Length: 473
Image (tube, rainbow, N blue to C red; front, top):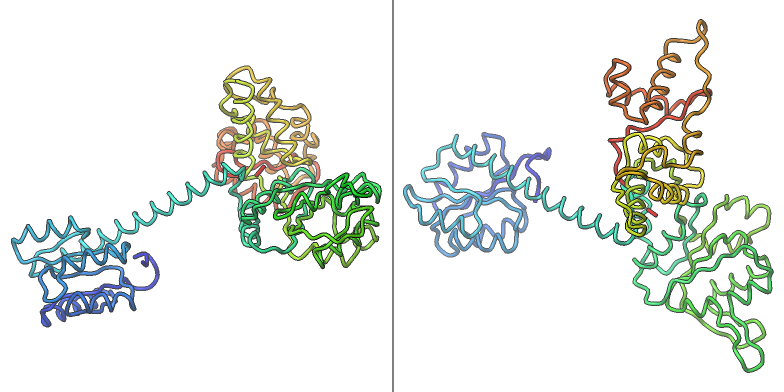
C-alpha cells in the first residue's frame, strides 16, 4: 500500500450502507484534500479495493451482506497493509473491541466528529508507515546477515550495484568476465555467482598463468594415454558447475583455440585422445590487467575475448569503496581474533583513521593481512596504530612540505591545516574541528571539495571515520 507521505493524496474508501451518511462523510474528507471513493457494503468494498488500492478503509460495523467485522477479517487476510477504521453506533463498545481484535487500527463513534476523525486518520497512517518501515528494516537486516554469512561484506553504492548485477546474471548460463585490480576479490565474486546460480556441480578454479601450452591443455582438458585416463581435467571436474579461469589473459595461446571451441560447441577432447567429450560448465574468467590491451597486442584472441565477455563485471578497488573499510576490517578482526584466541574486539579511533587514510594498492588482500598482523600484536582489547604495519603509517604522511608564506593563498593554507590536523588525530573530523575551532560539518564539506581536486604536496584525504559503514572479501 502507498505511504501517506507520498506526493499523491491519501486514498480513503468509505464503506456504509446508509447512502446519506456515506455521501456526507465522503464529501467532508474530499474538502480536507483526501482522494475518496465509497461502497455500499463489504462485497462492493472488496471489488473497489482490488482496483483502486486505498490507504485507509473507513467502514461501518453493521451492514447487510458482508458486515464490517467480516470485511476487516478479509482485509487483514488479503490486504494487510491497508489501515482500517471502524465506525460504531454511540456506546457500542463490544463491536469496537471485536473490530480491534480482528485487526482494525482504530474506531470512531457515530455520528462521526470530523476533527476527531482527522486526528485518528493521521495516527493510523503514521502507525502503518512505521510498521512498513520496521518490516523493511528487518528484511534488510536479514539480508545483510545472510550476505555476511556468505562472506559478502560491503554497503558502499559501487559495491552493492556490482552485487545487484552479479545476482541478475547468476541464473543465466552465459560466460562472465570479471575485471579489477589484484586483491579486490574477483575469485570470491565468481564463487558467489556460482552459489547464486543454483548449479549443483562444483566450483573449480584454474590459474592460467605459468603454463606451457601442453601443460595447460593437460590441466584444462585432461590426458589419456592408450586405454588409461591419466587426468580428468578441470572441465570434467566442473561438469554441472562453474569453471573459474584466473588471469585468463595469460592463457597460453595454443590452448585458446580449444577453449573457444568448447565455448561454442560445449565439446572438447583430452590430450592424446580423439574421442569427443561434452561438459555442462559455466565459465567465469578474470583478469587484473586492461583486457583491451591484451586483445590489441595479441595475447588474447579477439574471438575468445568476445565469447568470454558476454557479461562484464568490474570489481572496484578498495580506494573506490572506502565506506566499506571499517566493516571489512571488523570482519577480518573477528575472524582472526577467534582463530588466535585473542581478546581483541575492535579498533581505536586513531587506528581506524589510519586504515581509512591509506590507498591500499593491494586492496582487500593487503587489508586482511594488515588486520591479521594487528590482531597478533595488539596489547589490549583494541588495535592501536602501533599494531599496524609501518608502511601504512608512512603512506598516511605524504609530502611534509608546508605552503610557502608569503605566496600561498588562504585556501591552500586552510587545506594544509585541515589535512595535517586530520592526520594528527587519526582521521577524526570531530577532534580536528575542536583543534581548528571550526565545525565538523565544515571539515566534511571541505574534504568533499579536496577529493574532487587533489593537490600535490598534501597528505591523502581521509574520510570521516564515524560516518562509514559497510563492505566483500
